Length: 146
Image 1 (tube, helix red, strand yellow):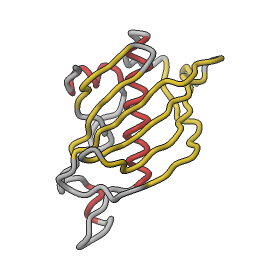
Image 2 (cartoon, rainbow, N blue to C red):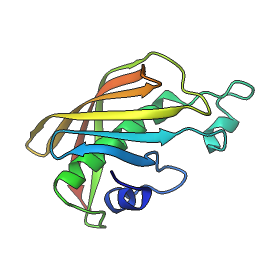
Image 3 (tube, rainbow, N blue to C red):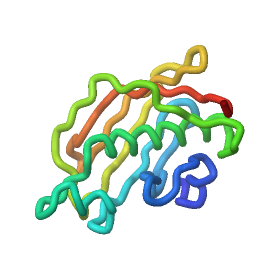
């Protein structure tokens, strides 16, 4: 298990854009299960949507990408540095199955499908109470400072 302090060693994101609160389980170079506690205090709920708050789908995908990044960086024991970043380069087959609302605990699951020539490919799922909220295939690369 990784705490928020541990996660910050592997991700450069910070409030309000750090979307992984805790890692529940992790198998190097295989899979990760993390959580995002969704609260009404999230800044995006003010405008998405007033009177009917729903977590934007793009932020659910970002949370999945962040969990996948923790998997890759932790697997390589590579911590945050100014010399390299992890970039999202593709999202395939994204599907949204249920809205994510304040009070939900989003369970983020990412499984490494392939790593080849600097490109990671992950099968990702976001669940709430055991129900699928979103799924996608996420592609990412690690790049040095430009």
